[in-house]
Length: 480
Image (cartoon, one colour):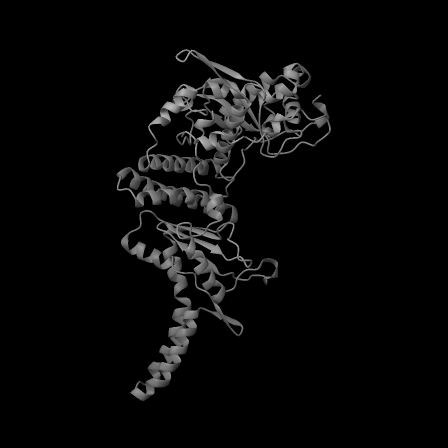
């Protein structure tokens, strides 16, 4: 299973840590200028309402504003992201270029702060006003002009910015910026591919990506990431598909990739064809020999009362296949709290929740087969609850839209691995080669790691919704 894991798309975290990703030297140059000409925010030592200097990274689709940390480090996330309308006219494009100019730094003159341009124009008008009488220009013209020019320079940009801003979506909320940056990271890959390709499909992908960015920014202006999560997830999945398809067009996979997949999985990737579905690639020999660190589930079941339940744990369970949009779904992943839903068989669901969450790490994915292993191979299930009825209720919740889930179409081998215990082995007979191929704990862990990657992409800045009206968790000691 090691030769079929996918390369994930660019992550937002990498982009957060690297302003001017395509031109790293620009950051130091811009930072030096910002330190000389503006206020660098220094956290708690700053006065209330201080205006930190911003560095603007202009792009073909908009811009990203970054703050300048006082300690000289790179900013962790953008301060502001703006996305231009993808259907701008010529005059609108000119106004948007004006809007994307360098952020104006204000200078303090006594108790008043003004734009640097205002101070320069004021000084020039004073000089002109002093020289005008020498050339016979009457004061009745000089004085109004000298007074009006600084006022125009100081106040005219604001209404111009407002007018141009009608053709851009500007996001400043911290959570919204963090999410939108995930999409900009993917769109940056599309733009880079279009630079080196004249293919119509690549150019079209860039156009679609720009529309998705603009629409996502509009959603984030009108809603928070929680209320708009389903639409945002759909847009990110489309961006992922565009990124992968574009990469395949520009740099096709090697011809032996399909043969490698067929040899190990009978032509099926380990996680199936569910969206967002970037294609699979073979790993290098160095990657294949890299040991996989042990997961938490490899330890024995913790003693009762040794640790308190923790949140953000997920249950992975297989079920009878169903076919939404002609696509097989045979395995689902839900948040542990979905077991407390009133439509799930109780108190069985609450007892399984206690067993599932006790002693786990936040974010851990626990297959139902792992719980069976911890319950002495399933002999203690009657003491906990009817897992078949509980998982059937969970599946009905998912299909009714009463909770969020990551729906997977696992091929046979991957599904068999997650349906087996953490130390079990799945043996497959290859009639063509006349031999058996064994898949064990290492391959099982790799499947769970890949499911975790899919979960990270699907959550898109917002954890899976477990449903409404959840019951209060029972005493952890109840699952004996």
